[in-house]
Image (cartoon, rainbow, N blue to C red; front, top):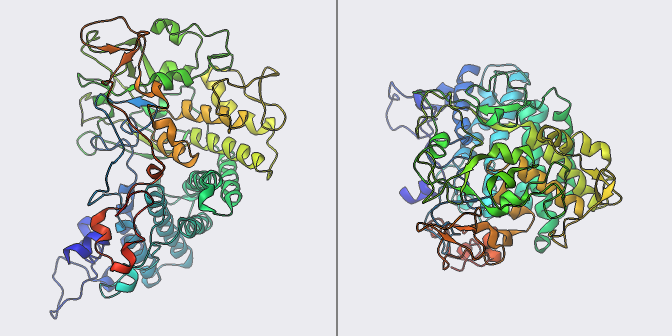
Length: 558
């Protein structure tokens, strides 16, 4: 039984205080007085609403330790943590990400809504909520593991044929995810309760899912999955609806990342609320204490354009990186607001602060938070917000154009990434011919651009990186673009290099003076198998022997 529960959440107990549903047979005449049976529970919309609150724990936000979506997503080319971070080298026995708890919870909700005495509009809304969260849970599983079993009903312990079914293809699962989200959008209320899942939140997830699945299908040709354009069109259309729904960019780039209260913020579509003494996080503490911070990499800092809109390799505005003052001069404001205006590192502490690369992350700081220590920070975290939607729209348009399914226009850029560039004090990006890129009418191509990426897509990807730096998107962006080699320091050495600094006895530097956080033997090698995580061996062991052989992802062995 213990093994079985580890494979799939089967506990049917629902105690009202913790929002769990009982499904276990009782071998007594009367149920315990402090528990609800399944039939007793589904008696009011209030109970349905209470049941649904548990789903919101899926939104990590800033996290409760070092598990947040922001800052702590260190396996990327954006940050270099003080401790060497590598890929998993062998399949683990367990992995908390291989979980079907919320999928089962959503299926139970779907199977019981008809029992509740409420009108059809209410039933449709709550079905939409359940299918939204089922889609979110499956989307996360697919991003990590690829093929996973699609299960659209709650399971009894006797249903071994379904519990231990073989994995379904990611193509089938993502088609089902999009169907769930389309249903959710059509049936969710727009105004149920503040800051809860509604039509706009469904559109935001369609925007995110569509872009991910569409580009993954386009670039991972080895999978031979069709309909990349279907997902990209879904992303484009959902994004466009949100772009005309009344959301507005804040004047300041950092506002949405450092606010004590995001209630009423016009940039936010959904946010996670933190309150002192109730629910807090650690992001401020980890970027404002004596703990060595995960600084931005040289690669990340150099990716920001200059104020003329051109990359540093082409811009006459670029002043070099001989010191931080010149590095920051004439640069995208998003860089200036993402790192501090001083370098700090071992042997050169500033107020006790130290960053692994010298570049101290400043994006999430809020001096007015009553407690600056981890884990007691209480700034709110965006879950879905307008800048991501604008980036999604531009990228979907450019990808569809590259596929011959759409013609991207200047208007597409002006209503999306150029709004972000306006706020960042950067010249507009312009379309020039098929996938060409221009600034002030002058066509340009970044000399360090990958040869297999059109210039316009390259610059739109750059925009996404600058806007969403340290927001948890970068790793999966590289996975969907099939650019995992960016995470390999033997091929992309600048991801393990920091600022140019003077010598001191406490640090290592490159021959030309750049800070080295790690010893020369610390190499992170990317292999094709790393596009997916291994399925935990403890889960595979639960399956019949004839299915086990097909459970592991390619390259991970037995």
